[in-house]
Length: 78
Image (cartoon, rainbow, N blue to C red; front, top):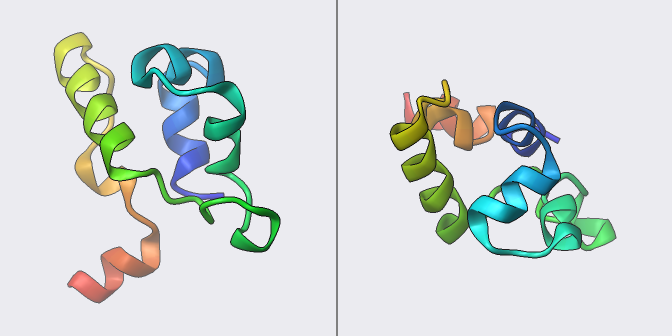
């Protein structure tokens, strides 16, 4: 689910995201699951998003702040 799938891919996969954020593999995988299945519906928790944004800035990973938000939230903000 977007944006989690896009962010996970940008950082090199679930394992890399786990290393950056310090959270478990199953927790990261839940970001891509719908809420009905115990997931976050593509939403990345703020504490993890913050760590990923800082890592991206430091290591030149090409993501933007907007990449962390679902498209419907972006449209509502415009």
